[in-house]
Length: 423
Ligand code: ATP
Ligand code: MG
Image (cartoon, rainbow, N blue to C red; front, side, top):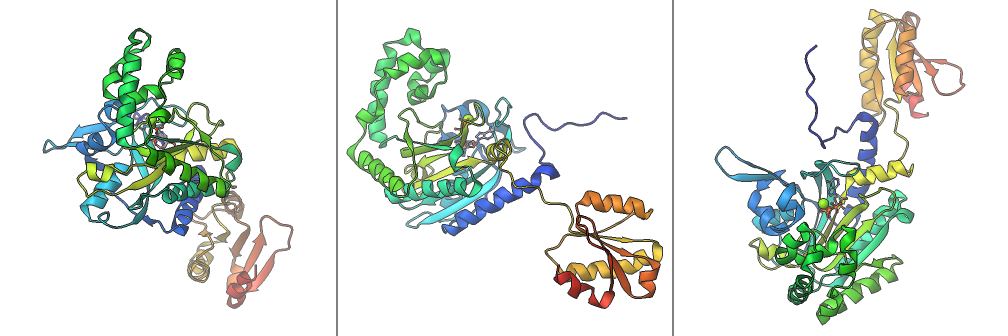
């Protein structure tokens, strides 16, 4: 036997036993955002590398070490998209969707990051995201968060996720805070780890996000962003909270939440769970009023979020909240010999026309009845329709119930569709 080629580490197949759950999730996400007036946008999986460098930020985990970047045959530097927001803004700018307009957009699909694969962290993973463009006021931040809260409610996850909230203020306020933070940390250089030293002048806010326990004390005593915020951002944030409270959505304020991407301002939020270990963030987002202009468009406020579908799938499975996988078939059609098998073909097609929602499998490959019934059972079908030579001679068919105590019955072919409509 020749050696099998394996999948790439951190890139998963979605097998039939799981694809039902994925479809259920995708359908629910689609339906919910559509009910808020969001429209789907699709963009390519590969973009110019520069797009991500300019938007996510040069000194971020993603751009520094996680991107799948390669040269195209003509020498262009291309990157497999690590996230969707930058792509969405690029497409919006390119097609004039954002200038002086409001857009509520959603997307779904694979993203790529070269991280250390582990439970809930993969190299190809899937995000569902939405972006709302053109509204600068806090009502939109709140709507986006409420929409996400509704998703957890519909999935039965409300008790298992917590909302963390922070505000990053205006870029100017952040700049003032940045200076104060760098001053403070520079006075304690000997306590910083290598990563933090490197970030000190390029992306000091990210040091606050450090998971290194040795830094905890130092960071706890650091200047607080809250003390440097501009009054407009403070008011904006208060209004977001007021609306969440009015809608009965609970939240925790987390002043250390800065998010790993550079483009955010004002509101940032994450939905976290304690049920997935270290990979506990299932959904993350915030406001990014400067990004559209930064990517060459006319200034346009925006807010959005992205959620990790794998983490949601894991969460539903861990908590036993995944709906029962549907059977493969509803009705299984079998025949006793080549003549009846041939006669079954138009019957099967007629049934598929009459019952487009039913899953109708016709046995292929012949064989004894016993074997055919085994296959019917394995398919999960509730009903077997059997055509034998007696049935063929009398223009009828036999129905056998596979999952309930109910006598088999023979039905005239002319009455078959009518009868099946009643079950
Ligand atoms: P983390 O802190 O877990 O690395 P992140 O801040 O890098 O997450 P975002 O870029 O905000 O994540 O992406 C939004 C969501 O996408 C995350 O909350 C998570 O659910 C999911 N996600 C991000 N990276 C991965 C990955 N490598 N594998 C699976 N899901 C991921
Ligand atoms: Mg990450």
